[in-house]
Every structure is written in structure tokens, then in C-alpha cells.
Image 1 (tube, helix red, strand yellow):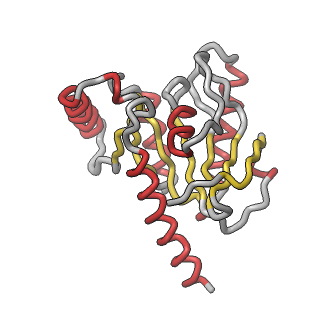
Image 2 (cartoon, helix red, strand yellow; image 1 turned 45 degrees about the vertical axis):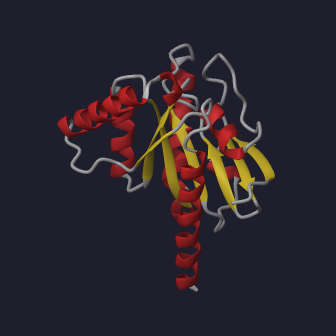
Length: 206
């Protein structure tokens, strides 16, 4: 897939955008999960702001790709050094986007740091996505920090924890590393297939 950024927008609310039929793929996760680095890796260029300090992304950032679909960078959540009011504002902004954008939100790539044991905040957010019938792919980041055997062990532990928490079906999963250039083709090919399904769906509606 050719990857050309054809437009960039940053807004504070979904009401600032005219809803259209453009398919969207949202990236979300806790602050410091490596979201901006992964987005830049996927795009093949620096489009998302990266910082050693988490919590920098606080708006909804739209990156239009090939004038055909949008990559959406949602603010990270759970950053304790932000005020409670600011954390609540970010959570509401994300929730409003995820719930109100409609069918054009084709998929959420839900980012999880593979080095860290399952966190309640992540499990709760993934449960919320299921409850709101929002399709997501569990996307592990920072796999360059672990050996292949450790990666497999962490995946098994994560799956076991989710089953113990009541999950019957384990979410679709992609393992990534912006540093080791791992997972980009998998994500892009998944988006390509989902785009085909989405545009076929639109044709059936006409």
C-alpha cells in the first residue's frame, strides 16, 4: 500500500468534524505506551508528536492517508501528572469520538505495552469497547525490549489473565516494535483488507 499523508487536522471534539463516509482507524492506549512512535513508524514519517514526557497528545489528531482513509491519534489516558479535570476531559473526548463517529470507525488499534502485566485500566477499556460494539485489535508495543521467548510468555500470561477475568474470546492481536520495525506490514495489510470490506459495505447501501 502506498502511504501518503494528504491532510492533517487536530480538533477538540467530534462535533468539529463533518461526519462522512471516510473509513477511520483509531489508535489509543495509556500514556507512554509508544503510540506516537508506532504511528510514525506506520506512516514512514514523523507525523505524530513524540516526547519523553507522556500526556502531550490531548486533541483528536486526524491524518488523512491517500485521500481515502483516516488514521486517528486519540489522546493517551491514565497519566497521573495531569489534573483530575484534564484526565476526565480527555476520557470524555475519547469516549465521545468512539461512540459517536459511527460505522466509519472501522477499527480501533488498542495499544498495550507488552512488558507490563495486564492492568485493570486496560482490561476495563477493552471491555468498554466490547460493550459498545466497537471492533478493536489488541496491539502490543515495545516488543524490542523482550526476547522472542519472553514475548510468547507475556502473550500467554495476558491471554490467561483475560480468560480469568471472564473473556471467552481473546481479541485479535498484533505484536509491534517501532524500534525493530516489526508489525507495520501486518497493520497496513489489515487496514487494506478492512478498507475493501468497508467500501463494499457502502456499495451495498446504495
